[in-house]
Amino acid sequence: MLEARELVKTYRMAQQEVQALRGVSFTVEAGEMVAIMGPSGSGKSTLMTLLGCLDTPTSGSLSLDDVDVSQASEVELSHIRNQKIGFVFQSFNLLTDMTALENVALPLFYARLPKHERMARAQAALEHVGLGERIHHTPLELSGGQQQRVSVARALVGKPALLLADEPTGALDTRTSYEIMHLLQNLNQEGSTLVIITHEMDIARCCRRIVILRDGKIESDTPNTPWRPELPEEEAHA
Image (cartoon, rainbow, N blue to C red; front, side):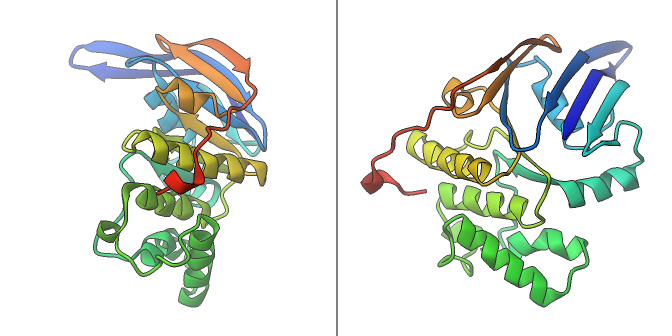
């Protein structure tokens, strides 16, 4: 469903060219849950922007659902993001003057769905992530873990082909991080395709594959038996 072939991304900084990606090739099949790891400067953030259709490669090709997106225009990329990709970020990126329900419904506004359908789908997404009783709370009235659940619901509400999570547990404590990973694993078991960018091995171990980047190239790409973190029920608070 996602295929990258010889991706190269070069940035010009002052008078110097910096090659962030140097011929990256890999595939993600529908239903996979893949972790992408690497040290600072390895190229994983650049790869995330390409996989998420936030930018295009300098050379190479990228296909999503058999459609080549590597040479798409800004308008085309925006349409692909809205229709095909859900994003979960470390910083949540929620609007503090909107309720959880309104935040989750926002992507559907840009998809021009009628209001009653937007709200019904947003409520269903929030119920799916365990926040059915918090739909009218604003982000400031929610814990960090609950805010990240809202972010996951927002990513899911458009029924994307691909869910991209960029350091989804980076702003959370250990217990809450594990709860969010339980949620993402459950979504994967239900059929969602996930790619997770992380620098934490515990988070990567929750995935079915671990891809390690170094100096803009894939150093390793190995299958993994997913680890499901143990979390006593009474300690759960996400």
